Length: 151
Image (cartoon, rainbow, N blue to C red; front, side, top):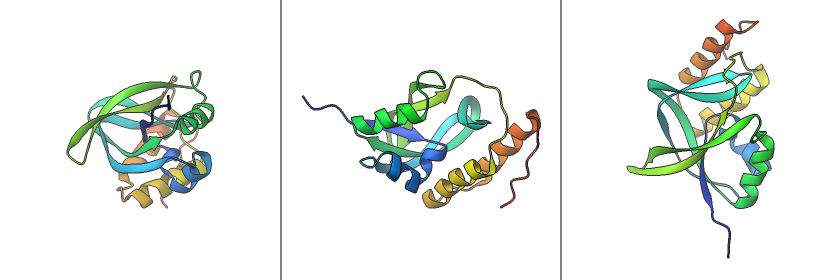
């Protein structure tokens, strides 16, 4: 019996099409949408947390089993990130997707290179970068060093 394909939403560096093409060559973009009532945070790398009224831009991917295995390794599942199922609306339909959420909530800013990788994903998906900038600024206020992400 063939293994089942899975829908996955990316909100961080996996929004970057070039990076995903390298890491998960058989993954396909299904669409773009928002994860509502959540907010983007940085714990050095991206994560999300529930936040009433918030929204996080996401890219919806269809994964083959080998893509998900590659992402499990990249995301450090299950120690660094856990998997959850969330509901999003895509093209007027509610769908259930897998998401990786960091197990730590200790916020600190991302590196400039990592931030720019996500920024490229925002640009290619047509998202407003203000949510990304705000998340980086918020994480900088709690971290050791405050970054100025004006690109």
